[in-house]
Length: 68
Figure (tube, rainbow, N blue to C red):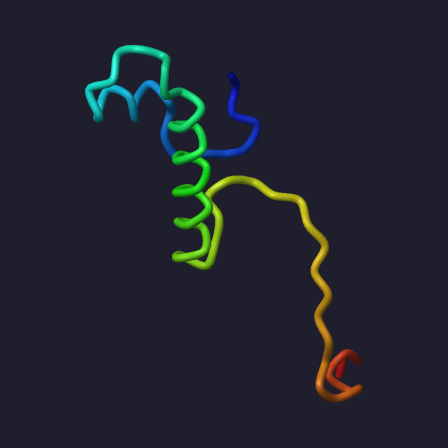
């Protein structure tokens, strides 16, 4: 199985750190890597990879948008 989202560690690194040599728990490891990576994003209130998104900013006063 290939991870389809950005994670901050590889499955191989996680398995080596945990001393796992078989493939029985690969799907659970992938889920843990994805969950922890998103938790890191939320905890830090940012992401550490390129993203494309549209942001909408609203001005409190109309003249804030006009050049002076």
